[in-house]
Image 1 (cartoon, rainbow over the protein chains, first blue to last red):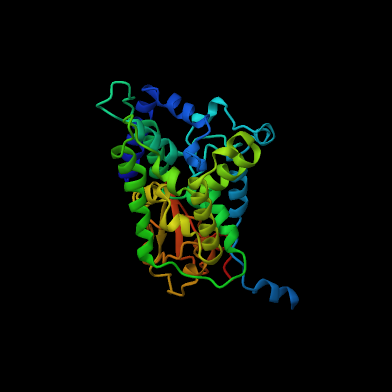
Image 2: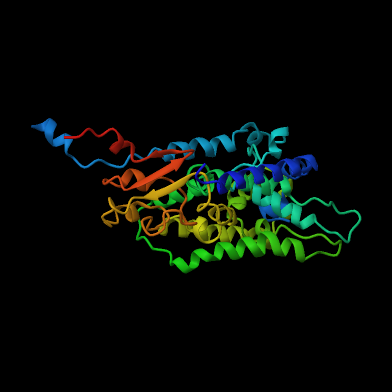
Length: 44
Length: 306
């Protein structure tokens, strides 16, 4: 493999992402995403 | 004779990217029934971070905006509060970095609905203005301050931070969520005040700028583009310029939607990898490489020797 860095970065990113999923962060994002974000729309 | 003339006529670059942009814009905001119900989509898939700056409060948005989600984690991350969540946003950061590691800033050029909107406005005939390169560094300031530092450091009386970028700047949120929700949800209208008009004014300024300059928000403000741009040099997807074939004719520069000279820096953090330069270079000097496969312009690839 000529260029290893992109693969290392990709693998590290996926590990970080899976760690976040294991900590229950998907649910946190989902809870935020299904609620109207008053800050986003300018009335927060 | 007529056939010969047609064969040697200069070819227009094949750019079907706008079809992809339109499909992604609709796909990321596909839950149309929400518009008629006066609410936002609340399906279980909405926790997925989309590879674009697409506000999750847009009524039909199918996924989560990674920049909004990241700020939410930073705003709630407090070690001195027992009730605060000790979550670092690893899922969001990891998914953003995974996209960056694979293709760099490519989603800006192909997926992001807000980038597409800017390109559509730029088609309006008007005098066109270049953006000074120095202004493009401002997006890093936005990323570091509005997305990371301020949500982490400035807290309210309850010890929580704010989503500073969403609240004070994001014109995508105003366009995709602010205006539609105020129109379809009557109960939100009494809450309209200074902040709403501030964001509306900022959106109006940006929309005016979209007409005169190419992708000004992406180039000078967007924190997501700033983040992915950092991966351009190290991603699996790579741009390459063959110095021996390049004649410095600047055709690629004239066609580039972010006004970069790719022959000076093939994997510039400003490049949104729309690949317009690949198809516009008639010398086949510009190519891209992904997973060991190298491609030049589709037009040149099929060209038979005379």
